[in-house]
Amino acid sequence: MEPLRIGVLGAARIAELAIVEPARSTAQRLVAVAARDRGRGEAFAREHGVERVHDSYADVLADPAVEVVYNPLANALHAPWNLAAVRAGKHVLTEKPFASNAEEAAAVRDAAVEAGVTVVEGFHYVHHALMRRLHALLDDGELGELRRVEVRMLMPAPADDDPRWSLELAGGALMDLGCYGLHAHRTLAPWAGGQPQLVGARGGERPGSPGVDEWLDVDLAFPGGATGSVRCGMASDDVDFSCRIVGSRGEAFAANFVQPHQDDRITVQTSAARRVERLGRRSSYTYQLEALASHLREGTPFPLDADDAVKNMRLVDDCYLTAGFAPRPRLAAPVPPR
Image (cartoon, rainbow, N blue to C red):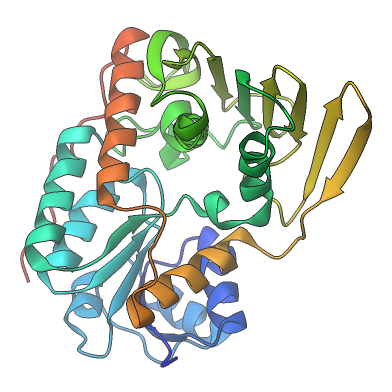
């Protein structure tokens, strides 16, 4: 296939793992980058082989060689720049969360439909064999009927000045981590009688960061009778990105379902035996970019779309309201027109 021509907004730390290495390993082109400081953009381009550096994000969007925009900016800048990219006629791969709130997410979705471009949220884990295997264990009946799902998304605290502690920049544990847990539950709808429904949520505020959740726990229930829980927090002693699926005949445990390149194990326990399966440490981000290239070049169905992103943001908003927090506000200063 002809390589995708990708423009990168910013020089975020996640970009090396999420777009640079996948582009290199799947033979895509990184044609442009811009950062808040041109020097950072130039350093990023030198290190990662980006073809040219622009002075601004708007210049990346205006570059006729760019067809796909990768957006790893702070949470509150996802939707504004995704919307600007859509209006420039570009496809978009955005880091999660898709927007600051569901209303903003719907605006991006509607604009993408009108423009006829693809905009997808980077829930990369769904493309990896590990998550597909968890689903297969339910599909083939080995675990029996789904009874319980438990997801933990815990990590040590970022620095006090990290954007993830900023309400204005749409920070918080649920936005940064819990959105994965909610999404993982939603992917189980085919084996649970439908989408999960919110039962309860509670959380704690980050000291010194009014309105920002340091931790938030969510209780869910599926139409088929199964229950679920998401525990997320950004002040834990250790990293724990695990998923446990319990059925009537057994259970499966993935120690790190969102980072299978670090730990690709699934432990399956039934009445007959216990075994450990390894699903491969090829990066889920690489699978994601490969799937996007196949979709854009050959029309292969992509498992996620902008409707899915809006539904996930609605659940995020509902969790915040139930836990006594306000949904994240839209950024006060919108992206200026070019």
